[in-house]
Length: 328
Image (cartoon, rainbow, N blue to C red; front, top):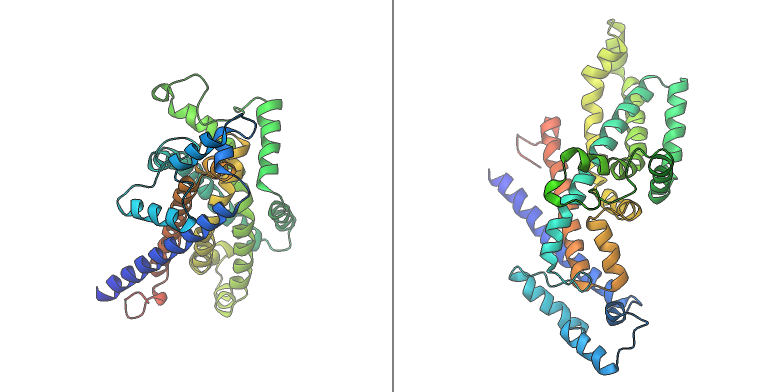
């Protein structure tokens, strides 16, 4: 119990340090960008006097020194206030609450699809090493690894939305409908293409890694001994292979949280999907420091939760990772 409590405290301490570090780096990057928040707010082509520009800067606290602005933001954050977005002119917390649910649904579906399909293709490819199917899977994965997410999204958009008309061009709900009137099937219909786009690039890493692990396991001595006893290939994979390749696959799958979050920015912009990714793009283009900081902290918590979940699952899948029944 004490060991588990120590493990939790250590992870919480690491998370706090990570949040502080990411917030400082994000703040410095945003204020160092060539984007002028006042120009983005009033419009670069607008005929606004210098006095009005100064009033806008004063209203949003942009006239203060960077260190003072950051400390003010930290002070408000300690009281649960994440500031107000310059882009949307709403509290950052309210934007995150509404957009995170949309992004969470998109990333969850994409994460499950990439993990299940990648693991299945990797196992099948490794089991039939050297076959036509194995060569096809390797080629398919290599092509996916070198293909940008936004290009796949545009390709899907032109093929399935414009040419075939099977799916909507964008957004998460039909245009002209109130949120309360949107059905679950309509939400799923709008979710299919963005989720497929986001998941397809994550398949290759899981598939290729799982394939190699299956090949290595099938070459071990205890597998050769089991073959000599008359066990079939699928029995060997089921009894001995899956447990040995599960932990590496889970490590890759949960480690892909950061890539998943980054890929959602591109996928959401291609399909005009109203999630955190599109909000991050808008905040970056407008120099919206409070919103960028809020999204950065949200992404850190998301990725950290994924890595922590993977660490906890290790002990469940493989008791040898535990030392004396306690977490190492």
